[in-house]
Length: 314
Image 1 (cartoon, rainbow, N blue to C red):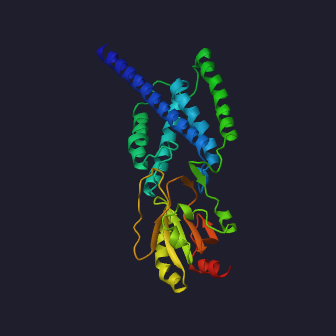
Image 2 (cartoon, one colour):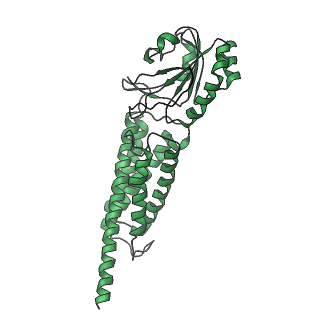
Image 3 (tube, rainbow, N blue to C red):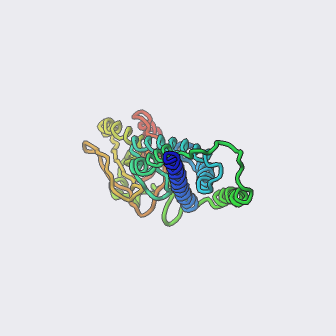
């Protein structure tokens, strides 16, 4: 009898622990979703790929929101637990990748910058381990038994109203491209203007207004920038031989902190002002002639031959 009671006590402890873990996981998902909703309503999303695009956020947000509500509701507990376990395994892979490529933020909490390594070891891995340990023992993956109708519909009806309502609000309230706090850089339009619009925000604008320049703008956490900068350092002397100067311009980081990529040699360096939050796919390469833009590329660093063709083929 004593062993049976101890077994029942252990089972009850495991069930309570599972409920607590699923509640915590659900609350984390709801908080992350709320922060993503805030981001989509207050600033534009600029990315190279689908997985970090505005369109993907529109898919991710209702899924995370729905899963968070599901875990807290306690409905179909084992199915919800299994889906949460799979989701956090996916989060671990994504966050680990961002940490390895040197991303400044995990992107989990909207505009709040959180280092991917912190997210990985403080949230993703611990919650995955807790979910794996405290499983919903004694629960079936699929019913029967069915939950009480009152409980089920009290959760299901508001949820199925809330999810499409959130999607509608996000789609119909997409932020403008330019505001006092931020600006989405329209690189394609620069060549149609007599003066490069960003000159007034760059600390070495006086130098860039005279002569011919190749300007490479970068974020310190941009993997493509880390590849492009050494290549441009190598071609620096070849550009000078063609009377073309080279400048590296660091764009402000998301967190507002200064993070310099090590740049060797006598390449001119500058910084873009943090008067605004700038949205653009880096690297950005611009060819200037006396402050006017001859050619510009976004998210791409052309090679030497393409630069020379753009500089002298105008």
